[in-house]
Image (cartoon, rainbow, N blue to C red; front, top):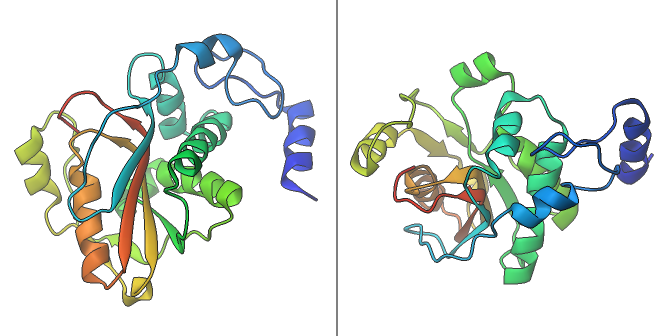
Length: 218
């Protein structure tokens, strides 16, 4: 049974909703028309040290926040589909999805996965992998040290908090990696993971996220 057929069948029993406002929408729609017009595409320039490129679909603002919150809470099944689909479109448009060997979602510590029950970046990666036809690797990069929440920390504090928190395996040696996270602000998380992936011998790393803040905090 194909993915699209499954999605349309599921829509009969659990109608698809806009992840921003909750309005009922068609099975294959990402957002309702009204919310889609209000979302702000990310058009800024941002660099992650060690990475070849950085791509974001939207500016992280009050319009898109409900979709991100639903994704993190695991409530709305359409959030990953909508955000992942938009990011896939942006990656294709920028040529950043070309010649990628594997998609790696930013990992969570096992303690946080037990508490939440899932990794939201892995949900987005699943959509990206399906659309871009690129395999996903959730095992080669691990968060081996539990850290404090990044919220409320400044740029320096975030960098210190995440230092040496990630490890990458030799499975990534020689591979061209697309590193994915849900939100980026200062880039501390992506920078630390990129360093770990490059240390493991990856030939290149490109970074992507669904939303990028306009501030310099993460």
